Image (cartoon, rainbow, N blue to C red; front, side):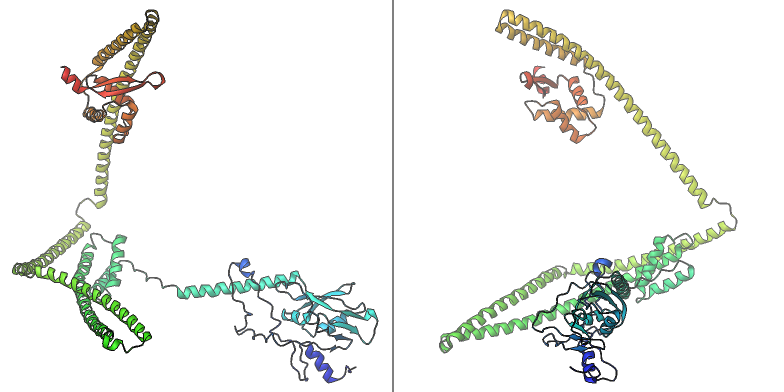
Amino acid sequence: NMSVTDPTAWATAMNNLGMVPVGLAGQQLVTDSICVPGFDPSLSMMTGITPINPMIPGMGLVPPPPPTDVPVVKEIIHCKSCTLFPPNPNLPPPSTRERPPGCKTVFVGGLPENATEEIIQEVFEQCGDITAIRKSKKNFCHIRFAEEFMVDKAIYLSGYRMRLGSSTDKKDSGRLHVDFAQARDDFYEWECKQRMLAREERHRRKMEEDRLRPPSPPAIMHYSEHEATLLAEKLKDDSKFSEAITVLLTWIERGEVNRRSANQFYSMVQSANSHVRRLMNEKATHEQEMEQAKESFKNALTGILTQFEQIVAVFNASTRQKAWDHFSKAQRKNIDIWRKHSEELRNAHSEQLMGIRREEEMEMSDDDSGDNPSKKLRVDESALTAQAYALKEENDSLRWQLDAYRNEVELLKQEKGQLFRTEESLTKDQQLKFLQQTMQGMQQQLLSIQEELNNKKSELEQAKEEQTHTQARLKVLQEQLKSAKELAEINGHDESQEINVLTVALVNQEREKNSEKRSQGLKSEKEALLIGIISTFLHVHPFGANIEYLWSYMQQLDSRISANEIEMLLMRLPRMFKQEFTGVGATLEKRWKFCAFEGIKTT
């Protein structure tokens, strides 16, 4: 029943909507901090970079949220054309869908049938600036605000009952349901904002990386006589030696050394060599400091060990009968624990000290072995030889400088007009000589390859002839075996055995004759080496070996040798190697044996 013109009621209504009218005192019921949209975690999936959420409380952009324990009390809201009544506080809060990213649009349902766009704008413009209202014929509409936090203020009105004027007609009342709406424009603006934040984050990270990146090494100047003179001065300075030696190394690797600049480079290399003595002196100084530190450490360790001994002596005295009986049980237990711990620490420190002393004794023994008079004489002689060597180096350096000056004078004379061949002509002559030598070498290789090819061809022809001869002999032997089998069937089993023995003997005699015919003198040193290796191999195999086993062993020594070559070589020497057949039928196997010793005994 409160009047609309009452300023107190109007201030209460505006305060309930979170708006403070001008000239009216009041506190906002819904603060902007509650209306801050949640930061979308899908930014990292879209851009590949996880940016900083600018809406985190405590970052300076958003104030911290109010405590959640304080309940929010909804009151009646009076407007010019309507009145909003709050829902029952005992009912649960109205449900809402998940908030879309960058949501600025809300869905408003449950509007009265007689509600117009002007009334809707009057109610919801107190939540913030409205950019568009799309009203439907079925008592609902979509409202788009200018900012995201205004949507939270509109969601606050969800559940209120709206009544137009003082009418009680159903068409003039309705229960509002405000929820988040998904709009393409909102999502597009949110994506643009996220891209902008991602760009800013990438720029920030790039600036941070550039700031933390180590500086690039200084550029090395190009060689010139002026720069070489300055570099020679820097090489003599101990503080600038590291920088100067890097430049010198770069020039030498670039190939700046030639006949004209050889003298300058030699002087710079000599200056670099002069720093060796300084570095050795620095090393000796550091070693002396290390020895002093070791000595101080040993003294401190000795003092600590002495104090440990005193503490252990106190514990041992406490454990004696006179004092031990006066302590309680708990005190005795603590004293025993402390004594054991102190003894362990004392033993560890004494072992460490003994190790240091053993190292010193070993070093002293080495020094004692070198303290004899002969050693001193050797040291004096070594000092004299070092001085003589240094003088010799200086003499050599002066002589090389003189040679360098002479070379420069000769170059000047050559430039003035004396007829000498240039370096290009010399290099061309050297290239021609090198090409001629390579051509001669290739011709010699070609001749040797041709000779080897002819030898291989002759060996191949001989192998073919031997193969045809052996095939013919095999046919003859097969016919003889057939006839022998027929005779064996007629005369009986005993005679067949005799015939088989005779045929085998005849075959062996024929093979020996053929092998004697084929046997010739050794052609090369390689064949002699192969015979020696094969003889040794077969000698340790008294039961013989087949040609595949022998070839696999020889191939480890010479991968170019073939099984046919080994078999031909064995067949050429029947008095050293013999072939035997073992097994029956499918298990028939041909083996080679070494028989040279048998041939010597028979002869």
